[in-house]
Amino acid sequence: MKKLFTLLIALVLFSPLQAQSFFAEDGEAVFISKVPLHTFEGSSQNLVGLINLDENILDFYLDLETLDTGNGKRDRDMKLTLETEEFPFAEFYGTLVSPVDLNNSEPQPALAKGTFKIHGEQQEVEIEGTLQPTSEGLLLKANWILNLNDYDIEPPSLLIIKVDENQEINIEILLKPYSEDQ
Image (cartoon, rainbow, N blue to C red; front, top):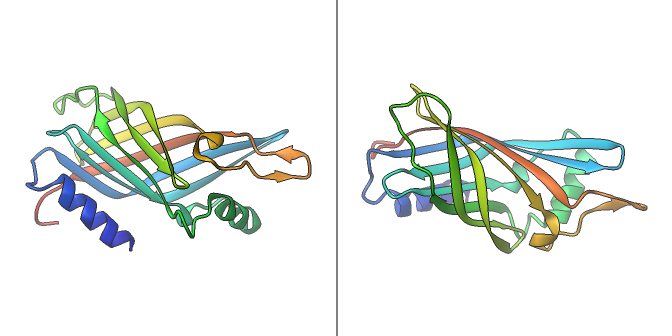
């Protein structure tokens, strides 16, 4: 299912393929969650991303089943809370508002505007980060706060201790030039 989804996105974004298109399916997504007196994180190395600089289009998605907090019970509870069987993906689709100079190897401020979807809900968001051209491709780093209530996700609790509704999200992904041969 994941490969089919990736192929469909690539066909939509890259028909016809452009020289300034970048793709990766091994980016890192990390969330940081807090409860009183304790912080934990979960991560996945399966962030899929597409950037088409000619069209200023970005599309990123994550299979939520790949998130791992290092604690099996917490992972099961998280997936029940996110209802990953019904809503297996989180996705951002939008436009890159700030220009990127591919000849400048320094990290450049990047602003994306678009729709973030999770748990069957979607919100218009602005996400700030950096884009850095490298010899291998385009390195994207971004972070933002995701409010669980905005996506109809009830923060889990243990007795009277509830997980903070605000989750810090961090992504890092090295997108490589995309060509028809891939």
